[in-house]
Length: 352
Ligand code: KG4
Ligand code: ZN
Image (tube, rainbow, N blue to C red; front, side, top):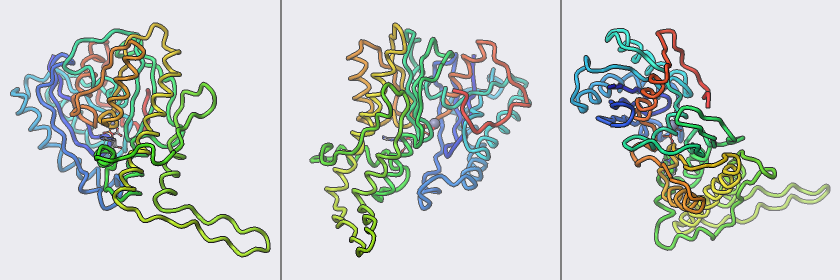
């Protein structure tokens, strides 16, 4: 079965051709980083307009690179949730138009679920039950997986997602957008000391399977830009704000490494709690943009080996947003009986 997948939930316009849910014939991604850089984050209106411009060329490239004709497509898979509504609508409209004009079925795919599927591209089915982890710009969640399609959420972030924390710390350090890859590079520089700053690792209440990254982000902000002055005591002169040390390259490097260590330690801590909830767990499945992070990849490998699990983590190209994961999961959903039609809507939240 040849599936054309389409993805436009945030700031990447992507299309991909995947055979039988596994074999990727093409995966084209047009990013918009440069358009959003000066704003320090994704501007929804700019994102929708850029999708509009990129969609047709990206679709043409995906079909051409796969070496197929439009008539060979058996199914259109579309990431229709979660995401920015204007961005989702561009991809969804293209998907509906193609499905209708080619006379082929359409399936809607949840983007977060697709991140969990990304590691299965190009390989055999792993063993279940599995513990799943999505670490992206919008989500940080753990799942109990009975198979690739039956996914039950165990916990998720109560405030910022881990990728959002990487991006905000990147902005605090003046590293541009998105900050994640830049922090990853900085933390790997010679001499980077990941214990230079004792940033908080959020545990939340005993046994909690949720995450929190806003405290860590604020701790980094104070370290980099200084703490606010303490409140003045009644009848006393206000105290001065503590002195701020200059943000030298060495300090930036150490802040990046220490932040990254704290952020990733929280993942390992919560996975350690979650694995108790997946009886007979055989596999650890990780996905999402932050699964491209060097420390995340090595810590996930360490966790899997300590718990005798097989680790499924996407190739670097399938960690960040892409349409191969949409096409791959779309095929599986279709084989499982899912059918959608032209009334399929764009939904801002995930069902996972
Ligand atoms: O999955 P994704 O492309 O989009 C969402 O679904 O949110 O994830 C994007 C996130 C951004 O926050 C980006 O900074 C982060 O993934 N990211 C990284 C790395 N590469 C991408 N974070 C840390 N280290 C990386 N190497
Ligand atoms: Zn994503």
